[in-house]
Length: 252
Image (spheres, one colour):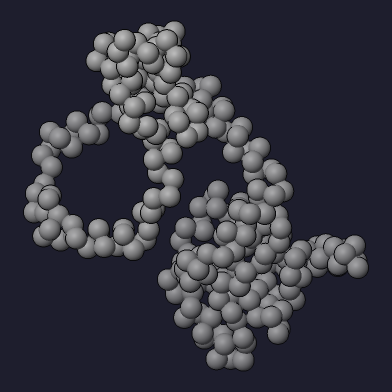
């Protein structure tokens, strides 16, 4: 009796409902499905049992991962003139084909709904949202990113006796904001609004964020500087001051 026949009798290899030859991984006992139901595939699956071949997941166990050092070394090895596409250009026909290849293809409604629900549900979980905010909190990139002209403006005010810290972080378990400038000693907030902040949707976001910052920091002054018009605006009205006072009393 051949090894293949013996494996079939012992139940080590079998055909599933689709007719594909299968076996189990000797390490994790996971079912491994062959590509088809041909005699060649049957022999290959049987032979893999003799060789003790593992599934793809088990093969990777214990092997070194693709580290940042490997990536950097590989990037240097194929950069510049060493890159196989160096000096070449895609034809207009290929660019058009690439553009049209997936044009019009969209995720179906059910898939979109599942993705949307899963993300929303995850972000409403306190533990997930806290981890997300903590990750942003540790980001060095967010801390150093500034608008053009922001640092120069804060520097001028600091020369007048203020102590504005650029990109001051307002961090809670539910929110994370970066204020363009905050003088903790004088309790003054300054926001530097570039051209982007003049868009309607961004203005609405800025106002909502502004109120949250006022409620948390309770500044004496909250200035917004419009870099397009070169004008300042005081944002704390009497109403805001009363709101901040009520919030402070509740916290106390």
